[in-house]
Length: 136
Image 1: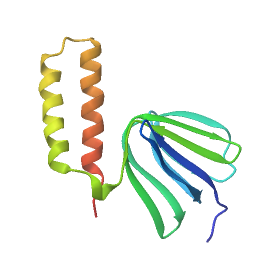
Image 2: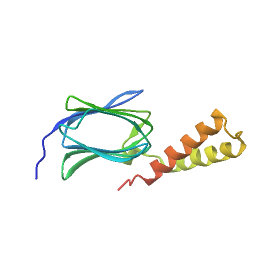
Image 3: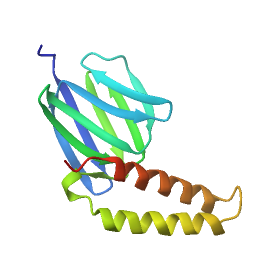
Image 4: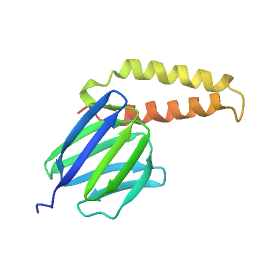
């Protein structure tokens, strides 16, 4: 069953990654997973690292390994502002595993409650999520 389409845009610090009409945006917020359809109520959410899915249609899905960021839904438009949005086939698993190992080592040395420890925890969460993204 075809759904009504709406504009979805994905931006990173490097620039625009995606800007097309979609039927649904699927991602993860700090309080759980969310699927946004056309005519969704206005929304602002903090995004956790996960697999971002942009459904052009039921069988046509654009996927990204998504870093931390924000989701804004207003006027039948979804804006995804994230630190990173990487296509699954462009993920360098060995580099991610190496960075994850480095972050875990740094976490062990970071002082409890410090900003350094918080940064390490965010980095670990991001790279663990990226490793879960299926490169199919």
